[in-house]
Amino acid sequence: MRHYIIFTLTLCIGFLGAKAQEKFSTKTGTIVFEASVPSFEEVKAKNESVSALFNENTGDFASLALMNAFRFKVALMEEHFNENYMESSKFPKAVFKGTLKEYSSEKISATPQKFEMEGSITLHGVTKALRTEVMIHKKGNEVFVTSDFDLKPEDFNIEIPSVVSNKIAETINVSVNYILTKS
Image (cartoon, rainbow, N blue to C red):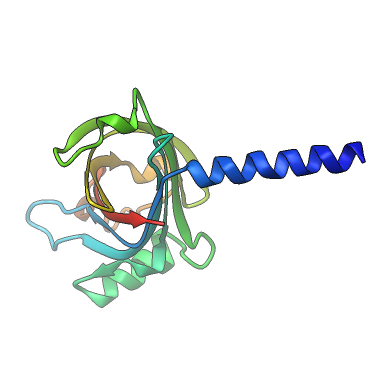
């Protein structure tokens, strides 16, 4: 009987906690990365099917991008990206998990607010700490999140062959844009 009471109490607390949370999500977030070098062909890709989840009460944020969903202007570049650099069949996704620092849900309004996001990104099987500034605002039942940050392929054990290394930037600029709706 005692175990039954503890189980029921735990279940009720869990239900109330989950009920009180305001979660927002999307499956249509956008990530654009650019690794272009002047005087060479543009190295830029876009993924418009990125999933993300934001907990308005805690400031926790998570995002998942499938690597083979990045689209390039040149099909051959997309093929090389997936097969040679990202090894998308072996490492099919990139994941970010983080929390907004000095966050309070009262700070979210229709006016964009700047926050520092601290978390980790897992890419190509390697997890690294990531700190970046994000802009967040809310209109009705939607939360808008944008950010720009830089990544280095070498930090994620992504090898760029010497024959093309001068055509790809050492630092990749990444831009993210999410419109999340209440779950």
